[in-house]
Image 1 (tube, helix red, strand yellow):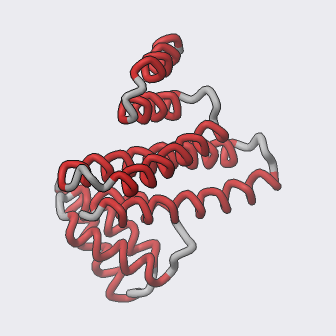
Image 2 (cartoon, helix red, strand yellow):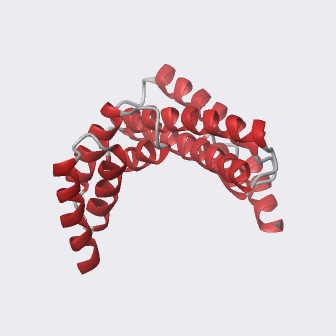
Length: 188
């Protein structure tokens, strides 16, 4: 803990000198998360996004985990997915087999799975408040389905997409299909 506190002091000094530096803002946000201060982390991440919305997709993923609104979290992850996709495509044109390209492929797959889980969570929360809003649930279900399909398109035999599809099928009360997905996971 002490090292994070020291790091925070140094990052604050650096921000005093360079308040527009998004790398420092992002790093300070991560330190704030480690120190258990999500409110400050959120402020740093939002400032970083405001200053440079096209860099560092991770800031969108971090912010999605600490924001309090499920649909905002989904929107943040969707933006992260777009940024990852842009970076991945650029890497793929250089060398499709590079470790960087493969890592971005896995990150994009993971972000899509995260997106599906957020949509399912939002639907569950909304159902508890108003079970009659079927059109909203159907729309979220379609979005979750699309996110899982995107993950499968990137990593067809990956653990995360298999788990995401099993969760999706459970939420749809398609128990046999969920079991099939879980069986595939267990066979890996």
